[in-house]
Amino acid sequence: METEAVRKAPLFAALDDSAAEALLESMSRTKVARGRELFKEGDQGDTLYVITAGKVKLGRRSMDGRENLLAILGMGEMLGELSLFDPGARTATATAVADTELAGLAHADMTEFLKDRPEVAMTMLGALARRLRRTNEALGDLVFTDVPGRVAKALLDLSSRFGQPAEDGVLVAHDLTQEELAQLVGASRETVNKALADFSSRGWIKLEARAVTLIDVERLQHRAR
Image: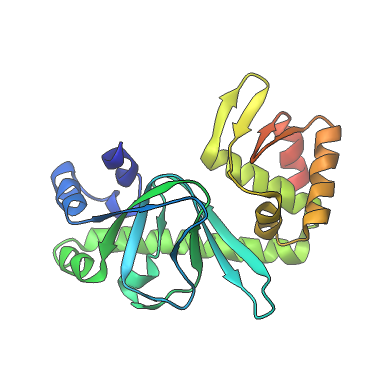
């Protein structure tokens, strides 16, 4: 299962099986319990991590204590990849929202590995570009999209990565509290809860503890535009 999860990461997309196994052997293993931090914003970092089980949230905190979630990452996704190209202070805090296992790759090991494999570096740059594109889209949504639209878009994004077919729709076990979901959307918990309640009353979704079932995906897609 670990090998399967790691091979999903962009880091391994350009590798054949033997090269992927060799790289996997050089990676460290880390376990983080739900609610615990893997690293904090401002910490010195020189390691990339691939999630092999569980989920991690990336967030930043303002001077007055408010938190904004940048992303929720799951199995096969990477975090801390900037440290491979520019070792330095972490730009966000990584916290497990479920019991999580990760495989880590240090900057020195990756640098040596890339010397004879420039195609891997190109794949990594592509992954960074996709992350930047998502960040730009999120910034645009904060300016141009109302809160219900952002909530709908967030639910669809979570569904695309964590959703599982269910009897009455798509079950999305996101493992987030109401407060964390609001931070991900960039709005108050009260406003986000109001949007969720409206979607539920219309029959578009069914709310559950740290999960939601999407019943009418088409309506949510229309609302997210």
